[in-house]
Length: 194
Image 1 (cartoon, rainbow, N blue to C red):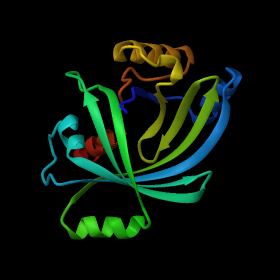
Image 2: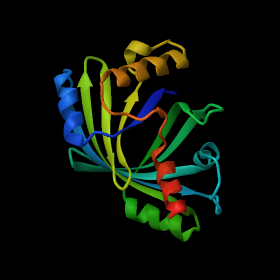
Image 3: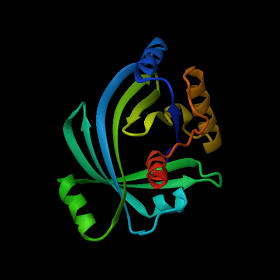
């Protein structure tokens, strides 16, 4: 099932974000560490648009919930991207696997292009039906991801996005203007510039 989400970069430090959320009545539900290894069949990715790259990519994902209970998946994100390169919604398909390192080794040996690796510490905060994930992405920054909740069921996609953006702005944090941050692509662009 396709779900809408917004992701925005936050320029406050982590402690400031946590204090602001708890002051607003959010509580820490869960913490986890997630590592994603993105692969594609495309060899030359310099200059490629995000929507074309992500359509031809998948990730090997390794996550520790509460920094225990390791889980590994092969993940494909079927994203709906509008003409402004904003992610409107996505459907995630996950296949559990037993060994992340072996899967990565197989994909590398088969000649796939490992175009990005991310390591993210995630803290999920809840308040009523809202769930906000504060994501500290290594070598990139801090982001908040907000996925649609039950209160938005049946609403048009544009209205869902508007509600989520309004909620994020109401947090009174120092946030960016892009509510469709593509973290793996941001890291790729930074790598290409270096």
